[in-house]
Structures are given as C-alpha cells and as structure tokens.
Length: 143
Image (cartoon, rainbow, N blue to C red; front, side, top):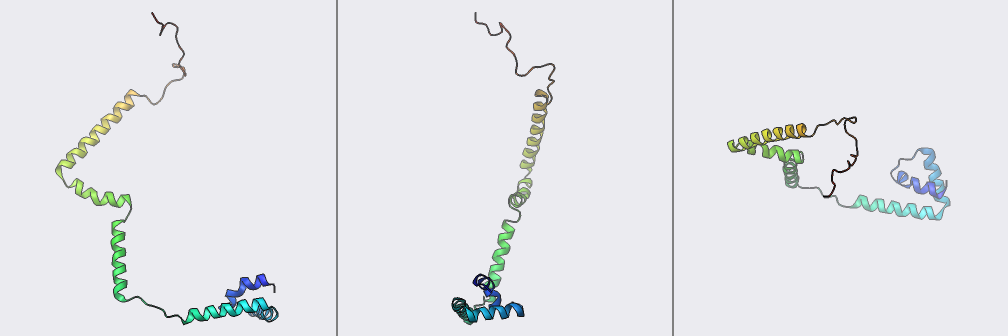
C-alpha cells in the first residue's frame, strides 16, 4: 500500500469500515511506515478526544421556542411575493370602494388595450409599405 492510499483510507480504518483484506494491508503499511504510523496515532487521538467531549442536549423549552419561531417565519414567508399578495388581497377586496376602483381599473385597462390594438395593427403588409421608407422629392423642400 502507498502512503496516498493510506491517507485516503484512514477515516475508513478509524471507523472500522474497511474490508478484512484492505484492513490487513493497511495495518501492514502502518507497521512499515513511520510517517503513516504517526498520522494514524494522531488521528486515533483526535477521535478519542471527540468521543470524550460532553454532549449538550437542548432543553424541551428551547425546542418548543425554536419550533414556534420557525412556524411563525414560515407563515410570514409562506410563498414569497405570492404569500404577501394573498395576505393583503382579502383586506383590499373587503372594502367596497376598492372593489369599485379595481373594476374601473380593469375596464380602463381593457379599453386601453383595445385602443392600442386598433391603432397599431399587429401585421403590416410588406407589399404596400417599404421599409425603410424612401424620401419623396419635394416633400420637405424649403421655400
């Protein structure tokens, strides 16, 4: 086994996840290579220290408080802008004056779109008009 392979498999060795054949090759390499042996001992020491540390569990009150804060945040930002519009739409529609304004706005928008469509046709015949327009002599002649 090479040192590079050893380094790649060190975590697997520490957590006993190597197969028997790989484990025996790994241990044989540790016995023959001083650098890898030192690295293995240091890693085992770090693992031991991590297992000795005290685990702090959150109190039930803290968990309840965090869950309530999460639910409030989710309700506030339920669907982004859609959630904001949905939360304000019933308030706006609830006022009789706002219904009249909304209706007038929709009617004006409809007439405006109809006027724009009638004024500016969507298709222009290429045979009747040439683009770009050509200048006709005498049209802009100075007196």
